[in-house]
Image (cartoon, rainbow, N blue to C red):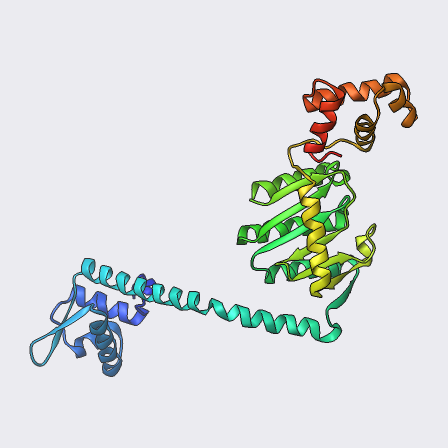
Length: 322
């Protein structure tokens, strides 16, 4: 018996065997078909009936004998029939997407049931799993802040999760603190996110660690300095509004990823430049030598492309450096 090459077009192994026999022996009857394919007469008759329904066989004379339809026309007809069926399945799947909204409401209700609008998650493993689950159910966007380095145990899991949901189409905006970007692995990770379509910015301003999903649910660290201790899942509208306002303020004050951020000493120099007239006063305010202070000022002016200290301070504010 030949292989089932027509299976992809909805033809069974037995039906294909009968069709091939009809092509080789046109004008054959049911008894001869049964003998030629090793079938009983009823099974052979059922296979021929199915081939006629598919447009692969035609009957002639009385008592009937059967011919196989030209393979070129037959395969084209089957392919068209199969594609029409697949398109209908796709339409049904697309039309059923509204069911997700109801399922999500049930999911959220189930999450709220045990502990209301605040839920505690303990331990880094549970935090990572919670972020992954909330990302899976998010449909529009995810907002994230990283106030410091991501611990090595979590970085690979965070990277895998973020890239997976970006490829799925989830919009992401991420703010990383300069101390996080100082880590080579995290800097590479931020570049990967940007290449995959995420919006990534950096800041030297203090951040609190949080992740916000679809502006409906947030995850905030219970200890702003140690994410490994756990987090709170927040669904209370008033708290969410405050967290969203905080994120948008940080976003407006952050810099594009390619804009190298000043280190803490440079930020202090920039603030001092904006408030004093003389280098001597600035050096005293920062408790550094005049030569060191002037060296920082000159380097910052070059980076900012500013002709004088006043213009440098304005440019630093425009870049959200201070």
